[in-house]
Amino acid sequence: SYVLTQPPSVSVAPGQTARITCGGDNIGSKSVHWYQQKPGQAPVRVIYDDSDRPSGIPERFSGSNSGDTATLIINRVEAGDEADYSCQVWDTSSNHPVFGGGTKLTVL
Amino acid sequence: QEQLVQSGAEVKKPGASVKVSCKASGYNFNGYYIHWVRQAPGQGFEWMGRIAPHNGGTNYAQKFQGRVTMTRDTSIITAYMELSRLRSDDTAVYYCARGGLIEGRFNGMDVWGPGTTVTVSS
Image (cartoon, rainbow over the protein chains, first blue to last red):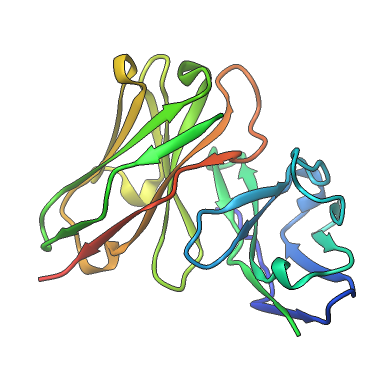
């Protein structure tokens, strides 16, 4: 099964840029989706198809995907962005979606 | 607005079964897959399977084959996930989520239910 690797934690000061990575074998050939989950809440899709932003998601959220690494980028980080972020792709070999282990974003 | 509403928390004994419901509203229920995803305490997300509401077709993760059954009742626009032979490590929050047009490609899970906590304990 396809494996996605995320760092367990990322810390950033308010107003700075947070970059959360998602590693996978030739992940650049796949479409990557990102989810934000705040404590006690259901996940929310914040980026789909590598870099598309659903309606209602601030423009501060963006994504990139190339080679073996996809990245979620959050500009001008706010306290309210503190959450767990998980990446996801569709694994064609097993024909089902797989998730990364998640990254806890801490706003200092 | 598009919404998924799930049934309430459950407490089960090891060896029992649990059935969680997921009622859709605000969109064409038959047009999108419903996925089931679980999250054990402090852990990441684990995909369990999906159902195509228009014909009831299912795909299950290999890990849950033989223990999970996903069904739907289109008359009440509700999907169900039943997990049998429960163990303590099945304790988790179980989510239903809308993911992908039946006639399209997967672009993530864009609508999620609030989650149903299932606790397995003797």
